[in-house]
Image (cartoon, rainbow, N blue to C red):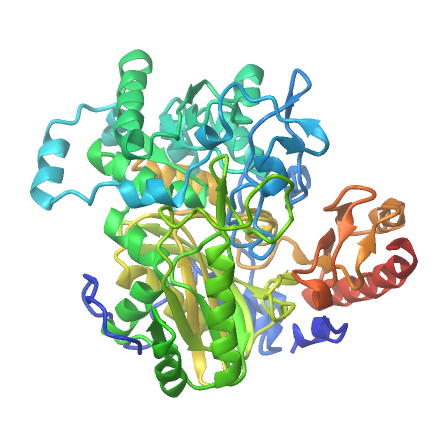
Length: 630
């Protein structure tokens, strides 16, 4: 990536069955409540229309929230050991840090190596990871009649009984007093998490413990979460063998019912793991607990279905075309135009996302994706890419045909500024939203770089992006919880990239908490427990931040990480830490997907100052790395 990229941060388809959609959303102008979308009012300060004094301060601040005590998580890797033995853990997708997308382990981990320490699991590795095959085996959602029968027979948990005794207006108040009442209801609630995700999500379970939630986690038998059970952070870990694909849903349901009989009535079922969202939604629906419909979840995870729903709802949609054979390539090129991006309709370990600038490029990209997917293998239960001779004794030919169904989509390349819109929904209504600016990715791999918050985009653009994000979530049929929506403000206006139906990863939770005082973890837990969600929000940012991830500029081995010490000592630097181990092999973009080397986060009184400091740090670090990567 060119160093000037940081400064840039300042400034229809082939026939397919139409998915069921929510009623079309009528765009009748701005409908966003400024008390729920703090970045809208503050954009006047960014634009120079108002001063902070003219904007005014929040009438009631955030009670006992002390930003100085906030634990900043980032996305640095963790090595999880129990009695010296590594535990099973999802790695975070190197293309999708802020989206928080997990991937199946790489070849080395699949064969039993973990940072050169044998992975001594008590069962086969395949028993520890959810696969696409499991997602494909899940039952359809229930009918409204079936859901009503379940709800009528559902006994009240102590938390729900307490909520019914409270004054609705008081418990729904967007004040620190209202939040105290909601926390009172949440304390003691029994919450089941369907898988733990990657170990960097430890802070989620620590927050649940802090709030008094009685946490039960269903995960693979060798999951890292058993460490938290041993520490008392998690009340109960229930091992689930994911090997027998067709029975996973029934066995999870049986395990949850057993938990209910021993611990008490459940208040919610949730997950912060991408792969587990379809399973969690079905389990919650079956047990009559608050949830989004399986249909909405499935449509959000299917890029082609999302585009169709957007179009049917009258929302701006990038041109797209479904490609299932080589004959479709020319049709896709004629319909979409160039530049274009070819990608799997639903993720396949992030294999096969490529930019094409002309029809020849598109055809080559299509053939490359077909070739790559033909060599995808299931190794000890993990979906991995394969190349000739990459692992001794393993056939390079793919064996994953029965696990995945490859469908591709070609869509127009979106120019302009990319943003994240983090939203919280309660009963189909957006009760919080804020924009974070994403900086240009490293193409052609779309590798993430940095972000800043509050946004420096003009107010009108922020409103358009937030409105599109809210309407997209509503059009998909979602009702509650936290959503991480990715958009671009293009030369033709706001356009949706995708809706992630769970909290984003990497610095996303940190960003919303540091800047706007909203803890996405706490609010999502409340939503999934059926508690009203109205987070108190400040009108002016508590902190203004920028964060950045250094992509390797050359290929070689990293000989030192000590260069980060002097950056950690600088005022306003919340972290400056390595993402790879000493001696690790690093790749630059010329040799494939670039390696993330380290991550940085800076806070300053003004976001533009934070951006400028990060830019200077990036230049200095890359200069040092020229001699440290050999």
